[in-house]
Image (cartoon, protein in one colour):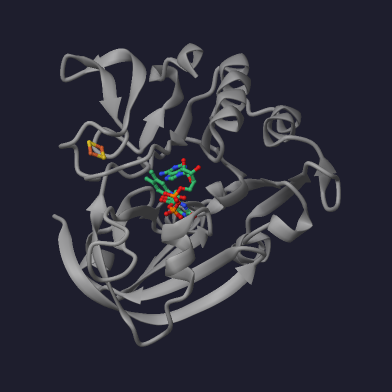
Length: 263
Ligand SMILES: Cc1cc2nc3c(=O)[nH]c(=O)nc-3n(C[C@H](O)[C@H](O)[C@H](O)COP(=O)(O)OP(=O)(O)OC[C@H]3O[C@@H](n4cnc5c(N)ncnc54)[C@H](O)[C@@H]3O)c2cc1C
Ligand code: FES
């Protein structure tokens, strides 16, 4: 079930350099949403910008959803100017969520940059529904771009920090931290971030023979499986197609089904 609703902005905070958190009153969307799904936001009324912007759910709490976002271009710049009390048109929830599978001892979340965005909701769901706290690797360019570390610690997660410049945590890539943590049998990895970081994470998971679920990004127009603007190349066929839609068949994919050689 998906909805198209005018949602009131309850809070809109600047949380780090170029990053904001938007809290929206969206009761029906919140009730239907699962971690890993996303919504399409109309950043302002009218036809500019023409397309909605896809954003995943950072948290899903009661009647509210929160969106953690980075200002990338014109749409997110306009979004950052919105104030509490204004309303936004929201379509969602869309896409397939992270499957929550029991039977794993270790759940390891690997995030690069704003790829952290879907993980607070996922960590809360893993704790609530599977009764175990995930380990979280958060990687960023430097300390100014590290997000949510204290939120995960407050949930009881073990947090590993990595930065490109070594300003906080290890001077390492997220995939290198994952390799050091040695995910063994009984582990499952979830990742989100830049494509190359997810590809490197997939390679580490393959070497340990553990499953890896990635939340992929693609530029989207309809967000709902119709325009074929968001396709990526898969190794296996979905509905007799090798080109799969990130918005509809994903955005969460088992990384073993992605044709990484194409990227
Ligand atoms: C399923 C999904 C969930 C997402 N969730 C979040 C989130 O929770 N928080 C967040 O900050 N961002 C998220 N994104 C990325 C976000 O949608 C884009 O950053 C945003 O649409 C850029 O809009 P803009 O108008 O500011 O930039 P534009 O002016 O449209 O583009 C600026 C730059 O960003 C690139 N870009 C545009 N759209 C995307 C995209 N979808 N993915 C990657 N690069 C893009 C463009 O190529 C260009 O280089 C998500 C994307 C997808 C597909
Ligand atoms: S954005 Fe239209 S099919 Fe995915």
